[in-house]
Image (cartoon, rainbow, N blue to C red; front, side, top):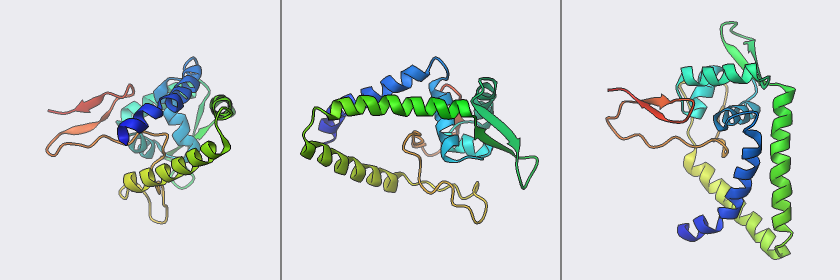
Length: 185
């Protein structure tokens, strides 16, 4: 079943990639991941952002620096701890995400129009069930990073890639901004 699904999902993945590629003139793929995570968790701090992206704090900080310079991200002192910086999207970042989603939805609508009503309904039911199963399987709380009383993140964002399994005994320390793994000796 996994082989058939992998083959059948090609068109869907192509739609996602096509829409993402249209944004690369303004932000990189890694920067887009930051923007999407900050959208879901407005006010997130840098440490939680780095953890949510499974990358080094310094790499996440550099990504944020570039997004601030590009006018996509704003930093403001935290409300409870002025030393902690909260991250927020700018109107330009919201426009970028709206364009990305609008492009994806137009492409999906064109493809879906060639399907039967029954086929569209079955596809939607199947994708919803797939999403729920994926969320249940990949749920990963961050207890050491979540202050008491908060529930972030309840489940991982499906648009953010899950971390790779770490072999026991490895000295994995995180990912760089380009997504490559950094290991210590």
